[in-house]
Image (cartoon, rainbow over all chains, first blue to last red; front, side, top):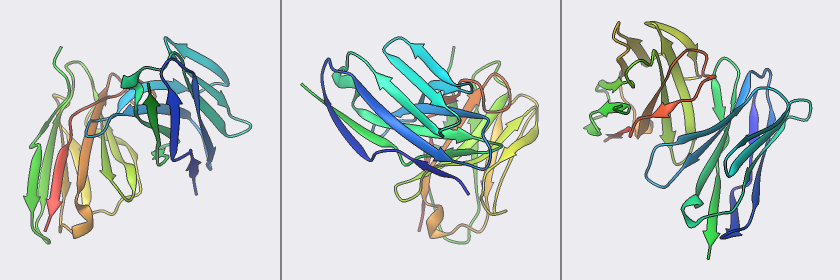
Length: 107
Length: 114
């Protein structure tokens, strides 16, 4: 089976940095995705990691360690609009999603 | 460039009926994936189509099926509807197959089964 775990909720302050962790246990692995989903809206793609290491994309970075079954999404210079759910998903012939981390950014 | 469109946006059906949902991908995109999102189960992958062929499949019963046409538009069908099928159904398109490329989601179809 496949388990994908991420914290349920996190709170951070505007302008700060927050790290959202994702651990996974899967029978195979072809890649890991991060998505952002605002309440009532469709998910939007943030990043895709297939090799170990850090992928940086503006204020967002994603890290992967395949040997540890671990990834994190790093959000810098937090803005109020970053308040959303962040979904980690592992691809291996199908796509398995974590339950999502609801991030609240406070002034 | 127009985004992913899904029709209808809202739908109410009765248990036992069947339903067909439609998804038009971004122009030039050849891959369409379907997802089900519910408060209890979260976001779950249904299947992916590329060049009219199903390439990847999630763990859903055979009541859930799909197809893709030569213009890359895709339809998803659910037969013998159950109350638990009430959900937001999302489709996403990407340039190529394998779910490894950036996917763009449509607004979803909210299905209510009574």
